[in-house]
Amino acid sequence: MSQVVVTYEKEEFLIILMLGIKMKFYATLLFMFLVLPLSGCAPNVVTYYRPMVDGGKVLTPRCVPTESIVEFNLPNTNGRLHVRAWANNGKHINQISLFFSGKDWNVIHFTSTDFQIRDIEKNVIIGASSILAYRSDGASNLTTEPYLAQPERPGLFRFHVQINSSNPLPNNFELLSPSIVIDGEEIVFPSIRFEQKQWIGVNPLNC
Image 1 (cartoon, helix red, strand yellow):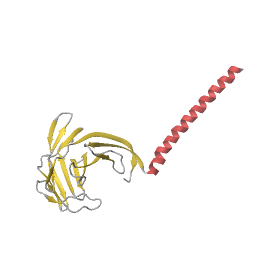
Image 2 (spheres, helix red, strand yellow):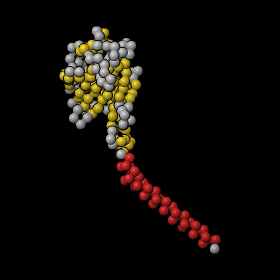
Image 3 (cartoon, one colour):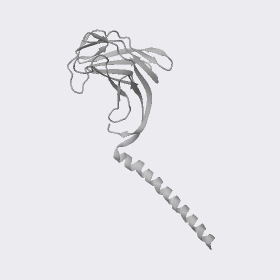
Image 4 (cartoon, helix red, strand yellow):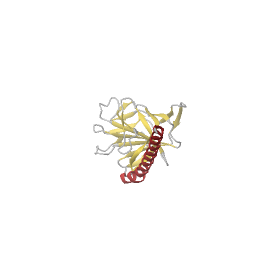
């Protein structure tokens, strides 16, 4: 008699276990097809470059928490000139961008247009296919001519340099820049290293 009771309890346990698994499965389906769409979220995979520079601070965009921007002050400028750097392999263009802001400076230019992209893994130098300068009056090829920047305005950069590559950027590289001149003072521009990474997660669709 005791053996019959034990057997019945095992069968009952198995039935309860199977019901629990089914309920968990249906709850997962319900979450995927109802809760996620209603919350405006979807799984996403983002490939990006994490930039690094001595004394720099890595920032993340608002929607996708990728550490894809680095902000730093140029040395020997007493914090008056701020730089942000970002790199991306896009559908139509592969680029590295440098954004310049800050209040207490006026004239800016590079000593040359010899920007180099060094593949760290292969130790190969890649030349830029083109270099653009974005100013308040429009965009054109970068030259060594001094540029009198417009006064700083909230949310806007005073000067922007875009280094383009005809080939995809390497997985691990550094940008070697010529010296920069700020109000007549020449300053060595630091090298910026970029490492390709991936972020996988859920982000709002309306971002």
